[in-house]
Amino acid sequence: MGSPLSDDSDGLVIDLAIFNMTGTLINNGSVSTIQTKAITFVGGSINSIINNGTLAADSNTLDIDGAGNLIRFENTGTMSASTIATVNVSLRSELTTFINSGTISALDQTIFLDGGTITTLNNSGTISSSGDTIDNFSGTLTTLLNSNTISSNGGVAVSNNNGATMGLINNSGTILSETAEGISNWDSTITTLTNSGTIQSDNADAIYNRGGTINTLTNTGTISATNILYRDINNTTGSIGTLINSQGGNDALTYSGVLPNAYYIVINSKSDYGKVEFSETLSRMTFDIHTSSTLIANTTYADVVDGLQIDDITATSGTYNSSTGDTYEWSLNNTSDNLWSLLIGDCEGNCGEVSYPSTAATQVSVNNVANSMNAQFSSFAMTTNFANLNTYDCGLFDKNNGCFSVGGRYTDVNGNNNSDSDSTACGHGWWL
Figure 1 (cartoon, rainbow, N blue to C red):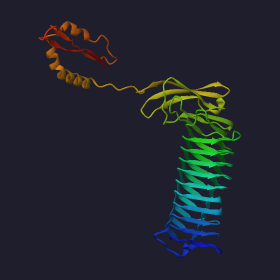
Figure 2: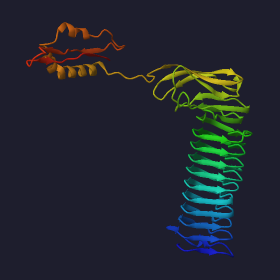
Figure 3: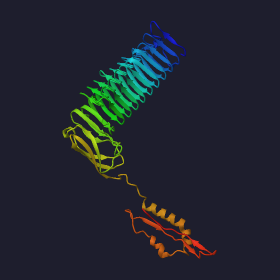
Figure 4: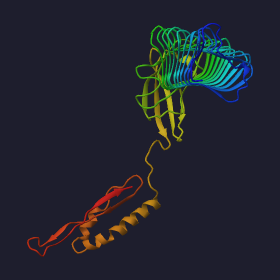
């Protein structure tokens, strides 16, 4: 479709229920209605829809209902709903692959799963609303990938509620709410939440988990509640299995509520490592060092945990085994007022030492050097004193008991006339 297709009275511009479409419907123009449902279908299976133009309606701009199954929907253009639900997936209906590199907006519930299923939602564009932007209400969102922006200026940016399920949220972009939570998980389940970008709320908790479950939460980016009255993570009566964190510096992660079952600090360098400030905590947790960390032996990492008493931590010492086979003993030291520093002891193993060549390899190198310099030594024989050359013998050996040296001298015979004869040699030692 390349020209405007609109309806200003009854709504429902394109009803795909009458199609058994195995190909692809492409919109390069404008499909709009001031009522509801620019594109809809009830039941059946549709292969693919691509919007490169404009889709607009009052609500339910793209409506998948009545056990309908849209295999692929891709938006590179502009989609909008003047009230609610730019994309609506109802109970027993499914959108298998949803790719957005364009702009999708609504007054509220821009992407609304009303008991329906989206298998993969991959956003590299912008999805926004003045209410709840992605609202998974009793539905299933198996994979949410965000590399650009999901935002709300009046509600929750990503809401998972009423027994809903999200399998994976992987955010490398920005999830932002100006007034409510960045991510809210209410009586629902998020299997894996991975953040390498920014999850932020300006006037609420950045991540709010009430009565819900988050199995694994990994933060290598920034989780931020910019209003100091709120927390980066609020786990109120919820459950977080494993929390992995590298956020630190002057912006330590703030956390309130039920402690995670296990907390893993990520250490990138002596000055770049995770810090967390706990408040209003319940239960106990295990502390450990994540396997992606890079440790320095005999180093103290200050203020890694704040706000916990010794009874809140199951163990304050342990052993860290790196992926390269190095072993470090670690311990937590309560410095003052429940502020803990992490002490790393000696390293056992390779520990980053330089590997030295084998004896056989060293002998081959020595022989090659000797052969290549043989001609030069021969020319030195007339003008070089053997005893003086001997002074270049090694007087110091490395820990591997290896050394070799070569020596020489410069001689100028009868330097005042044209019958000069001279030769050059040098000396140096190498330790192995």
